[in-house]
Length: 273
Image 1: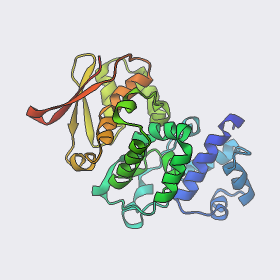
Image 2 (image 1 turned 30 degrees about the vertical axis):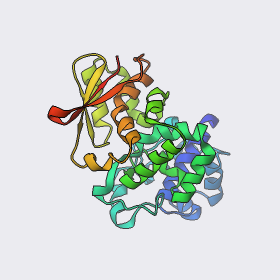
Image 3 (image 1 turned 45 degrees about the vertical axis):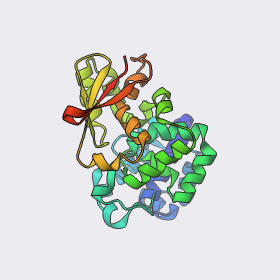
């Protein structure tokens, strides 16, 4: 593995180990290496040999061998089977029952990247106060509860990252969408783009291209109506997800989008042309 990848690999290896509640000695035994090797990999002072990397992927059911290129990994869904009963080691104070889950880390990962670059000290304090491990944000398909989402977006508002400013941010969706970004960037039509976005997000929203350039509609799924209504920023950020994806592809140059509710059919309308 190239040295440039060491930092990303370190983050992903540590996230995997902590998620599975393993000490370095236990983790290294599974992979058949010494604890010192794992320590060096997690410190980014060395990268794993190619054979060890693929052994790591197989042992922990990681979906994409190139996940180190975008600082994010996805586990097989069976890895989350015990979340409801055991909780998550990366956010132990939160209840992960099915009716309390609103989306996955992938949805808010671009904001995490922005915050760690621009508000790192305040964010580290936020994580410490809420006992949320930073590694939580490297597992792209890790569920996020309504309580975590609410606290996260309140943190953004307190740091003056408002709904209006979120629309203007240059968010990196290549990291957030990972292996799906290639499909999105190669899509030739808006219909295809929105199909891919809907397939790869689980925010409780369904995005619908209107057929007119510069606008789309949003349908709220039943479980999302209460869980995302805590904060204007939660609403706006989730509503603007397709807008930010298109913006990140450099295929969109537009003013701040407008969001309005369509009363007659309980949908929301976004325009940005």
